[in-house]
Length: 230
Image (cartoon, rainbow, N blue to C red; front, top):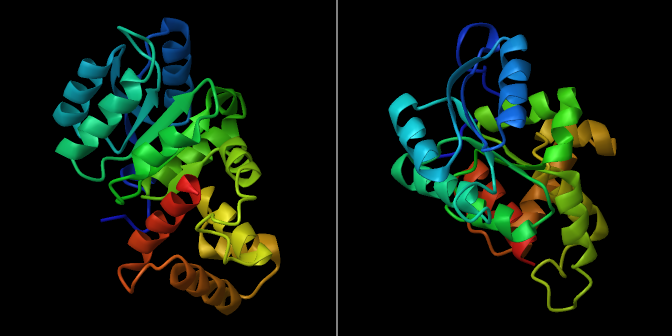
């Protein structure tokens, strides 16, 4: 089940145990240096999908950082390996990096409904604070999608038959922030709303998307998944 996004980070002083998967040696080593300088422990570095699966099962890291495209075909091997690892180790946190915006990749990652997923463009790594913040949130169990993925989804939601057509403009705005991985408190601050107003909007979103009463975090993931598939 999805972890509480507001809980304390695992390890001493927020130190995370991380697996890094990328076949580009320079980027992989750059990620290792960035993460270790931030106080984290990189428990394994790998360059292909099978090695990622093996490393995740062996080390059970707090989070894995995974490139979508790895050998042998350089299409979506990293993505598939991440999904396979989560099928073997449900809820294993994965922060997936991609060169291009592809909302369907994020939808595939979220399909099991357990959260703890991030999907960012590689350019986001250069914005160090944003990248590290996303990493920590995924490790806590949140769903974090790149703002450019959100923009692509919004651009395709002008159809009357979209499952999100019943949502108000405010509810769409709030759901987009949920998709970026923001907590209720952060959403309230950004939209200048009270905590109770945010909870009411989220309840309306769940109802309009036909998500029955369930664990609140699980429904949050399903709402974001509906958003991506719209």
